[in-house]
Length: 132
Image 1 (cartoon, rainbow, N blue to C red):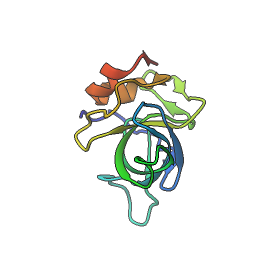
Image 2: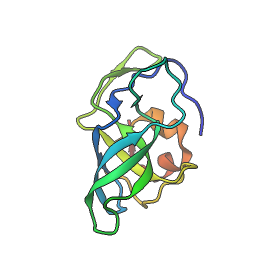
Image 3: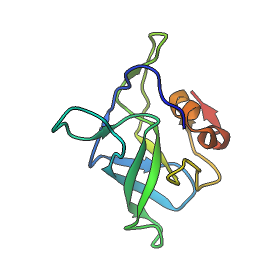
Image 4: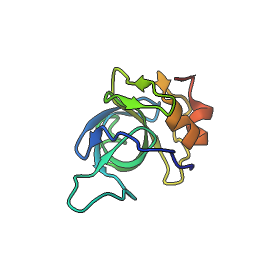
């Protein structure tokens, strides 16, 4: 895992629901926690593109439901600025199920993946079909 240069806009607070865009069996997940987030006191935990989060599976196969898993955010609706000045936003909020070290559990990712997530997580970029 590499760090992201600059200040990343965190558009997904704790409790947000995301689409799971890999083929692990989970369809919809909810953010439970954002580990290793270092902010000011009493700020509500939030995550952005490329962050590793802990999620609870809300919709999916019976084996996957009600499990706590790690995930990497690959898309967010909230616009964020890239170092070259362009603003990027996606149509939905999406993540892929991963291990705590960043290994993707699924074998394919549906839809585009943000460049920030692909640069930070090597296995996400290897599995992604489109990087934007």
